Image (cartoon, rainbow, N blue to C red; front, side, top):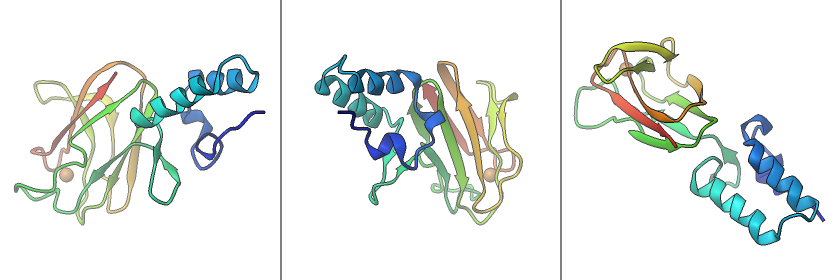
Length: 155
Ligand SMILES: [Cu+2]
């Protein structure tokens, strides 16, 4: 009997589920791996935040919130989170929840903008997505408020 939980078939986009997970689910359905192995795979997905289950039970993608107050050059309004760890193939969504517009610009270690992931100005409520296909440490900032810097590690 194949049990595919809602987190694989529900509101999550199938294209965001890594192939090894699909294979694992298939192997479980075919009786090739044990239930414990299958559950460990699901546990890994949750621990690595490849899939996040919110309090209402829906699944969401990893998000970086640009919070209210982000435009202020003060000791608040940092990206939430300022650093995000993800695995290869993860789609990250930035959402602007500030009253002001912001951009998401990938930059090198010296602070120069590099053409990797580069958004237009995101108005309040707008989002920007980028899929990380290579391992590494990434840095981004806002061209309008260059003191706001965030980092992402793809492991
Ligand atoms: Cu900004």
